[in-house]
Image 1 (cartoon, rainbow over the protein chains, first blue to last red):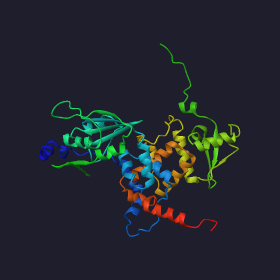
Image 2 (cartoon, rainbow over the protein chains, first blue to last red):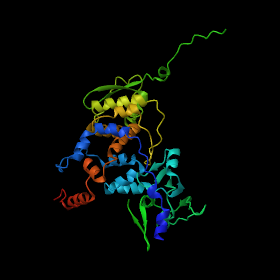
Image 3 (spheres, chains in turn yellow, orange):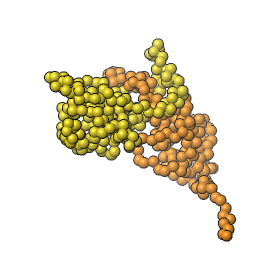
Image 4 (cartoon, chains in turn red, yellow):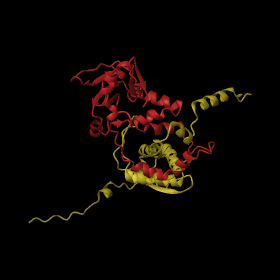
Length: 196
Length: 179
């Protein structure tokens, strides 16, 4: 059974996510020498912070970051974590699509792609549209079966297709995304999830 | 053969240009002139102008003092507002992802020292200029992208949850004004 799932999984052979143009970043780095110098200056841990950013402004900055970056930065502190969780708790509908992720992202700029996992997200009003790559296989879908009350719709055997519209009062987008961006490791006895 | 009637060419900009100008004085006493369309981008300034009852006739005689913003930041803000005064109205701010491309002109304007950028974001927040706030936050967000949460905590002077709890505890343990 273990080998069966491994053979099915072609994710390891999937091409890496294309790098976005980073001309803006390059230009900013030139102008952020103080910031970089501060980061690199490990010998002076007691140095004053570069900015004494009020929390409400910090939250505004984080709100304008890409979706996956917001989730990552929610670890900065309790206030930011609570803000992010509260903000996304309002999203109660999920549209889950399995398709070629490169194609999906190319066809709609609103999709934001995770840097490592083959997952892209688009949020519109109270709905999160999540695209998972064609490379996802049966084993990957079991993660959802274990963690969420979704139904798999078998369309063309032997491939499974998942195209579900979910609306649950207890649906938590952040939990869903955390699971979706973790790689499932199938063992003979059980299903475990480990981070990339 | 038809002859084209001689019609004076009027530049679109001239037609749209509003003659009403306002004077703003920064905290370090620099005086700036800003057009009515441009000043409307700042909710704070426009509320002030409305409340003071400034009109086309008395606007230039009554400069508006802005104590929280220095001349350098005010210059950037005035340039920004004049540049974007005819832009389409921004949709109401929602804190969900609102993707946009930072225009090259604005990128150049905001290619400033980190400290200046930080001061500008404070000024923008005070003057309540949504578009400039979006752009400043985008620039700061781009800088923060590759940083770990721990690095961000240091850069922005945010205490860890443990430090925060300790501060709260010490504040509640310390005796009040009555002793």
